[in-house]
Image: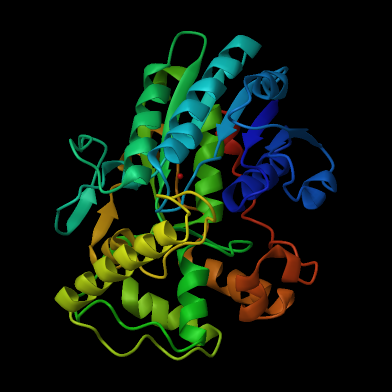
Length: 378
């Protein structure tokens, strides 16, 4: 079938394009004006459509003739104004839902996030499942707007228009240059990543990008009566002890481990001070609250929470309803990541972004599981 992929020039969106092509589908890739679409235009079976979530006309044109939509485009940073987050994550999703339905699409898969359930004050949470309710008060605007958009998507489910959401957590893998893992490795390489765990064991669920793609593709093909209106946690099959994992990834690239160890209370206070100072400097420079440049603060309360709160997710619903089995293991994913980073020119090139890469592409993902073509599935 023809699948519309939003955010196609980004990390996950680009891999969704690849995953759809590997499974024999045609792809219409939606990219914003000015985005680098050179790689997408080079792929047989891909039609590049220029548009924006704020432009209803462009969304209507992009959705024409598409049977399914994989919506990965979003504002995923942890800073910005309410207007920026609502425009990108909520209003943009509503416009895309309307465009897809009007164009006759029959399936809409929303890439959500476990952060949609993240509260301001909470401790470690292990084995979270889909029965967990949305908070009354979210951690930040990203969490809030992803949750609101997810609820709109789920409520839009109907007899001829099946909608669902997948919630991959901590997506990692080749071609990511701005996510948590390249940021942590870059900081280790520079010797400026302290161990913020305070000696606490931080257990988390992460999701390799190939596993997130597998889940999304399964959600696009699973029987409507099974997935309609639902949301699914998806993650790697292995739980991760976060700080030893980060040290191990750093060691793959000859980076020193995180040090020194910072007590938790001190680390949280430091994150609050850094984030507050960053906002004050931006306001003084006339950037407003979240306007202007999208450069992130070096440390934030949100990042500190992600790095120090244990959070693992139960994927039994995805396994049952989607046939999801996390095809990419952590060990295989790390080997492929190391090989890809070497191919593009090392850690400095990896974290610098696509312009610095030496023409390398991502390693091939796992072989397609053709059970997804029948009754099976971030």
